[in-house]
Length: 170
Image (cartoon, rainbow, N blue to C red; front, side, top):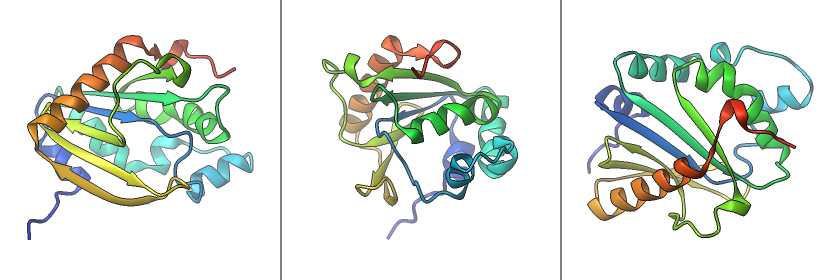
């Protein structure tokens, strides 16, 4: 049985690009950071998720282009407001480019059934969640057809999506 590399190893081994497509309106509502945010507590996202921030900062620092696209229902959910609020201090601060796309404008796009990370256009890390947005399992594939579908879907979303700084939650 082959061991699945850790997220840190996937980023460490990535040479050119890492793209992430998110398509849910809520993730892990049990996350203590989300609970704190709902309670009105303020925190530094880069400090709160220091390990993740360090992994992505290291990758972008050596020239890996890291992009994240989020397809969201509008008006947005409470969880998406939380993601939006931490994006500058976490994702953008780590060197990621982030764009948002209203689900209403994604109807004609061919999208895979699950969120994913695509590393160097060839290695796909599929995220499987339960109905409440809690992580169930990760699936790693190098199937060229899956990688091609994911890359095509991501690029179609990216082209149509709004950069983070211009996206309005209203």
